[in-house]
Image (tube, rainbow, N blue to C red):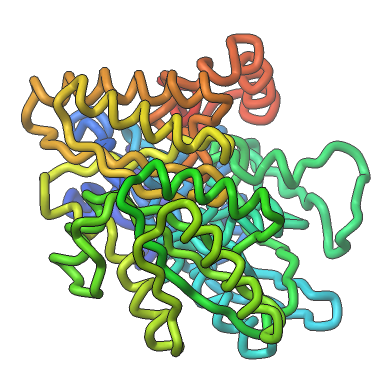
Length: 463
C-alpha cells in the first residue's frame, strides 16, 4: 500500500482508526471459516474503521479511483471465507458504526447501523415487548451488517424465516462511491426492482451496507421447550417432517446426532443420553394458553415415531439448560480434531432422512468423521467435518467428501447454503445449483455495479 494512500485514509478516519502493523493485519487473513488467506500473497495493506457513511464514501471513492480491493468486515464470524484479506487490500471494518438509531414501536421497525450486535438489538426491542426473530448462533457477537450481507439464519428460521424476511430498507454505498437508499419504512413497497433483497445476501460484493431498517413483530407471550430422544437418527428425521405435516410449526426444531450428543455431554454435562442415535430439541412459542396443547401433540408424534425419552422443561432454567447443550455443540466436537469444517447444505424437509443417509455413507466411504447437526425444521443440515488440515492425505479425502455432499444436496432438490453464504469456501460449487447461465447473470449484475471489481473480489465468483 503506497504511503500516500495510507495518508489519505488516515485523514479520512483518523490515525487512531487505521492499522498497518503486521500483527494487526494478520488478524484479517482468517475469519471463522476453515479458509485461510495466503499470508505471503494476501496480507492486507491497511485496515480502517470508519465511523459514519461519509467516511465510507470517501474510502470507497479512493479505492475505486486507485483500483484497490476493499473487503467489508464486521465481527469476523463469517464461516464461508467471505471476510478474509486479498493482496494489499483495504479491510473496511464497520464495528464503530454501532448505533441503534431508532426503535419505532408504532410502526414496528428499528433502524440500526451495521456494527450493531444482533443480540444487543434483540435485547433492546424485547424490553418494550417487541421481537427481532433472526437468531444466528453467533448472535452474541455477530453484527447486523454481517447478518444482512450473508442473509443469516438460525434455529428460529423454521417459523420466522431468515434475515431477508425482516430487512425492509437499506442505505448502501455502491462500489463507485454513490449512496442509495432501497426499500423504506413501509411493509408494502414495490417501487421498481427489489434492490433490498438483491443486496441482502450479496456477501459484500455489491455494496457496503451503512444503515439497516428491519421490521419487528410483537414478542411472543410465552414459550415451551422439550427434548425428544430417539434410538436411530432416521426416526428423528422422519419425526421432523411429521410434525410440520400435522400443521404444527415450532419456532425451533433442532437435530443432534450421536457424535454431537456424546461430545456435548462430555463437555457440558447437561444430562444428554449418550447412547441415543439422535435428539430433537423443540421449542414452541405464542399464546400461553395453547402451548401445552401444542407440546402435547408433538409429544404424541414423537412417541409414535419411536422416541424413547421425552423431557419437557418445567422451568425457564430447565429450558435454558437444554439450549445450553445446543449452543455448546461446536465447542464440544472441536475437541475431537483440530480442524472443523461446518457446511450448511439445505434440503426439503421430506428429504432430510435421505440427506442424512447420504452424508453418513460419504463419511464411511472416505473414512472421515462427519457429525450432523441441523435446523431440521427448515431442512438446514450442518454436516460438520472433523479433520486435521495439516494431514494432506486426509484433507484430500475430505475435499472429495465435500464435493459429494454438495452434489447429493442438489440432487435432493436442495441448496448449497441455507445461511452461511458461498464466500470463497463454496465458490467452485456454485454452478452445480445455478448453472452457467444463472452464474453469468449474477456476474453481469456484479459488473454493472462494480466495474472495477474492487468489492470483495473472489467471493462467490472465484478468483
